[in-house]
Every structure is written in structure tokens, then in C-alpha cells.
Image (tube, rainbow, N blue to C red; front, side, top):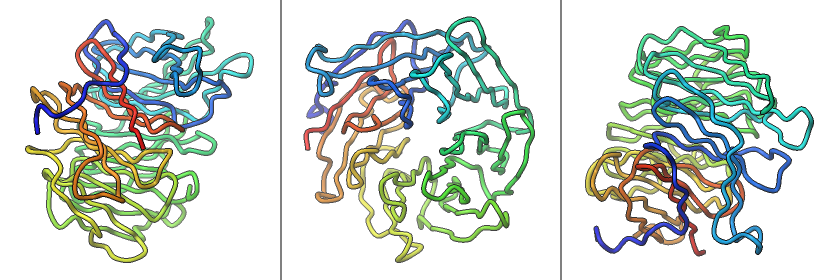
Length: 326
């Protein structure tokens, strides 16, 4: 199985090892998609256009808009819905987390105005962050310090949820902005009501460690995760236990992400650093085996395009894109 994987549909060369990569899930007003990737001391923001969207493009066209210097290696990154390329001045806004346990909010007009706001409060490694998806005026972050924290854009911590184990993923759904989904390493996913600040629903993997989870963008009742070497899927209206569970990776799985274009499509990756760590794309219509196996030395990061069945992972000096034939 290790050798049966296919190479990437497209690759884009980079100057350094890519630790994190994210397509913006929001409409930026441009025909191209916003994409950011982070390396050891920088974040590159650019636009991507694929031949599936534009016949004039050969494969992929990546245009760098700006390189942002970043004091430390970028460990996670989230896009703001306020990022727009179709208004003047243009606005690029995203946040990052690094090993110094700080959240950084970067705002730029791509000309001469660049601001960095540093948010301090976490006492251990930050594993994931996300913007409130409709207006982008708040950021949520989860950490090994057993907290999920919500910040305003001024850097004030407005809410703190105490967790029972390290927080690995936080999701904020555009159709349900008063709820936060928080996944914990010991195998529990909880939904918190931001108004009452109470937990209102919890899901149980039945095993640990839970490494990554995601809330389906196109169908709010679907939640997925990777735990141990398996993927698991819930229908949150039916049970707190998974409806589907399948082994995915030979060793521990690292990431789980739903496609933004198709509610039955999702991808998982093995842990970074393995020689032939794989990207697997799965379809709920055929859960027995992946519909695509991408063979690559996985760096880190996994993200789906906003409208195409295409995902990207980072690696050593390159971005690799896989198009799924559906």
C-alpha cells in the first residue's frame, strides 16, 4: 500500500520547509483563492488559480502577495473573513500561533500599512486557532494548558473554557456562530454555548489520543476526527458515539479535514516526519477504503480549497496539491 500512492496533481516550490498551510475558507472577492503558508520565520500570503477554474492556467498559478516576517516558526494559522482583495485599500488579516505561546494577529493593506498585535495568556503550546467566521471580530484558540480562550481583536481575552485535557482543535461554524466546538486530546469533543458559556453537547471517541477534529461546513450535524490510527465520524443528532469508524493509517493519524465542496469527502494525514506518511482522501459513500492515496513526505498542514475537491499539504520546500476525481 505504501507505494500505491499517486504523486501530487500540482506542486509549488517554496524556499523552506512548510510547517502549516491554509486556504482561506472565505470569499475574498477575487477569482483566485487566498492561500497562506508558514515556515521557520515567515508567512507567505498569495493567491492560487487552478486549471480546473481557468483554462488559461497550466496546472497551478501561484502569485505571492507578500512575505510577512515572523519571529518564530509558525505552528498554526487562521484566516479572517475580513480579508478582501476586491476593495481598496485591500485587506489581508490572519492570525498565527508559535512556540512562545502567543497568538499574533497580522493585518496588512499589502502596501505600507502592516500591524502585528500580540495576544498573551496561554501558558503552554497552542494547537489550533480560528476566527469567528461571519464578521471576524473574535479569535478562539486551544492549548496544551487545558483551556480554550476567546479573544477580541484588541488582544483582550473575553472568555475562557477550562478543559479536562489538552485542546487540539477549535471550530466555529458560520451557520451557528454562538457555538464553539472544542476537541480534547483524551477523546472528547464538546460544544460550548458562547452566550451562557456552558457545555451543551459532548461527543466521545471511545479511544485516545484524539489528534484533530473538524465540523463539516456544508452539513452542521457531521463531525469527524482522527484518533489513534482511525478516523471517526458522528451524526450529532443521533448519538454521542461515532457512527462510522475505520482504520486509516498504519501509525498514528495527524490531521482530519472535511472538504468544503462536498459533505461526503474528507481527508486525513499521517503524523508528519514519517518517510512515506500519506495523505488519504475518503468518501462516506465508500467508507471501506480511501478513494485516493497521495504518497508524499508529509510536512505539516492540511487544507481544502473553498470550492474545488482539492486539498493541499506542506512539505520540504514545496506545497503539494491533490485534486480528487469524483
